[in-house]
Image (cartoon, rainbow, N blue to C red; front, side, top):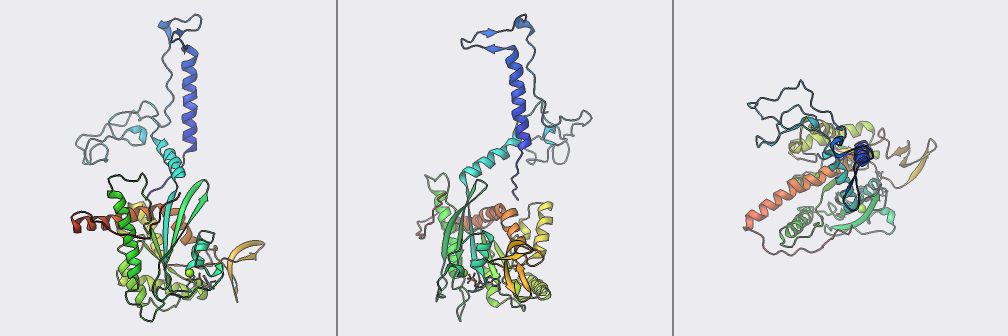
Length: 409
Ligand code: GDP
Ligand code: MG
């Protein structure tokens, strides 16, 4: 998992140290414009004190730490598998090798990355699948706190259910805290709405592969764009009908076919229509069924990076599929305005974790796993497509991909 943090204190320290060190060098040694050196009265060149080194921001290696034996099983560092990479004590490891005599500034990479990301912005493409009326458009609008789905019922005007599955991509640039995200919502109206829904995932699968192909084509171009527009689907929210019984055949078929090419996150739609007991029982049953049919949804077990990642993801997997509620209406509850749905028993608050799991889904999807969704898409799904494509054809042949969607950040 990738996690970007900020280190304002560290940066402040560096600035402070630079100031201190420049003060000392300036007091004793002034380089004048004509390049001659001026020494303060009473001081000759021979008594110039050494330049004061800034204090290391990280502790130096404690003297009692012994150098590791050269025969240690993983080498001194455990990094790089015996290719001669030494970790240094300044980085918080007790391995041998060189010793840091002062602060270098390696940790500022985080701040540098943050600045670059803020300037460049990023793409995030989310697909919503499930039969019509399950609250898909309402939920993405609730997630991003704006009308990001054109097909919301809230947008006035009836829209007819199409006779075949259509793919509709709508993009918006959302900015928060100086970070720009180009969000593309890919709606799939018509999915699961026909009498015969056989192979109705074909247009969806085709769209997903077309985006991989488009990216691949850009990547193998001799004159590549500095930044390849990313239209690949990073996440597919699959809406399960709140029947309280079991998954439908179509749900199973769709997820089975598509989980190999895209990150699927199953959710139980309109969970306010079930009692808490019904909801828990249904969630349990759906989880069992997904396991029985060998459906790997996101976050996939096999892509956990380490134990910390696994522990965190295990908790999420145990709570899935999230039973959600979406709404674009606000109600007054205990003197506060909250998004919710009015029922005979009172207002179901969308963001209240005691009422539904919308907040869990939002935190997982946006606040903790958004970057990982993009990474799994690139490193696993796209990579699989790319390898197959290059293998199958012994190279690339020209393709015709329409529906070009350029990044306009
Ligand atoms: P879509 O066709 O799947 O995109 O569904 P919409 O978002 O257009 O919603 C269809 C209808 O369901 C609208 O009348 C919404 O107000 C309603 N709706 C949306 N989300 C929920 C929900 O979580 N619970 C309930 N009870 N109704 C919802
Ligand atoms: Mg809709």
